[in-house]
Image 1 (cartoon, one colour):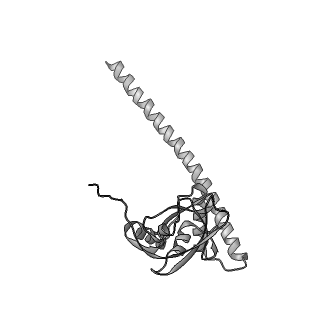
Image 2: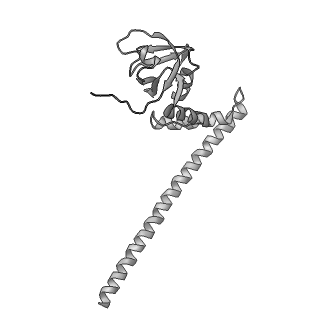
Image 3: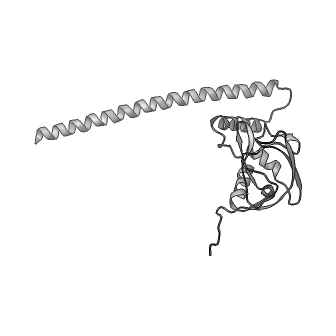
Length: 196
């Protein structure tokens, strides 16, 4: 019985040592990763400093850092994005109530502003916009350098105001300019139908 107890205590001690050594090793790996991250952040800070001192125009650090963060997220996937306080408010408006615009959902796909889908019954839907349509320009401004949130801001505006978008579709040979009158867009998270 004493032998079994000693064996049991020895086993617990061995497991304890294994866990401690594993956590130390994990901590070392984590520290190495943190050190590498800080090293890269120093590079970013150095680049920003060089730009501030030598760029032809004055650089706003906040805008530049936000651009760097957006670039970081875009390099991961097209769905992740950084939201400023204003962008977050816009997102809340989109998901919780109403806003004034043309009523389409967009994303960046292969570097191009792409319609995910028009919202049923909205000006975008009535104008014939379809999923996978490419929006190449908004009011004559190329969308190739816009983030989805920047494009959404340009598509929004007061009810009754006009916006012209240049759209390309797979079976078209050229861009089509489509003028759309903005309206109040109501958000419905669930569609419902009466069946009798």
